[in-house]
Image 1 (cartoon, rainbow, N blue to C red):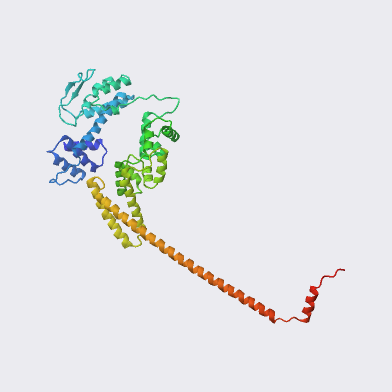
Image 2: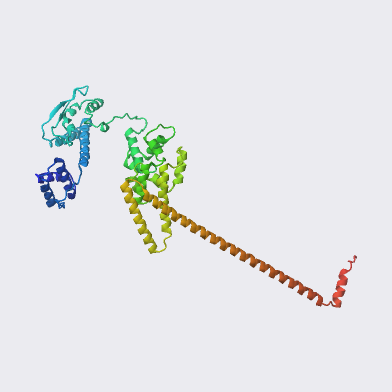
Length: 454
């Protein structure tokens, strides 16, 4: 029996052999086949070379609430198959859906009993239910034959019939019919939801990625126009506009704590991973701006009439985290040797592990985080004092240099004055020693006479 079960799984589903061990174990947990548990595990080990766990240790690969969640997806699959058989236009596809429903129904061989629901609904309605008391029942699967009797009715009547089974049918998965105008190319509500999902994942600056992943039937120009028309000031409030406005609002306390935790995990340069695993409600560009370009966000917040002052939880958590990041950068810049780098990295790793353990144990920041902040503030104050002392020393040295230069200039001026005096004395002596010849006397006398005319 166990060989047949596993071989059927291999034929129907293309799954690697290592994964079949877990699938068989889930089947065993659902059907509660505890007595034959070890036989199936031994067979899986022989055929697929899986490792058997220790028999003395109790273990569960999948917990009970996780199995219930998996089975909830199974119920959605049944509903979608019924809707596909009821609404599709292709006869081949309808027959294939009915065949899949019949194969699913064959696994349950219990006798059914009917329940009359006319006292709860206006229209008479009876459903067939299995007598087994378990959360793994599929009552909707037993009703698909009565539902498919209404294939020839119109769309609205089919929706009304499906809504009668509302506890068994989830109305959020029912199909919707939209009237699309042929004059203009408009976005249907489904297209708007896809655009909204793409904006949540990629942001407003990556519309090409949204087109490739979500809206490949639309052109890039159509997506841009739809996005601009949805967020303009004259547009009514919609999903896209509320998302756009929320991108400039401050992070709430829960988002901020998750953002800080993501920084501790991946670092400040991996905002895409932080957005994917910790802060899914904000885009990676917003997180990057919040961390590095806070001034640009303040300008956008003024534009959208968001108050400038940070909330209280920002003062308590975010500004403190920024100080830690700045101190970490300063410590990296001031490490000239390998020994200092090793010691500081060892101390930082110890303090980080302690703070992360306290955070996970208490669910928030505790007194140890505040002690680390005080130490960081003390280190910053000491560095500021050292910088001030260095500046004072530089100013004193500059003043001394200026005084020395002024003294040298005075000495040079005195030397120049002495040289000029010596030159004047020499000239006077030369004039006294000089004697005029008779020719020079005659020449001077001639030059002093007035000029003769004619």
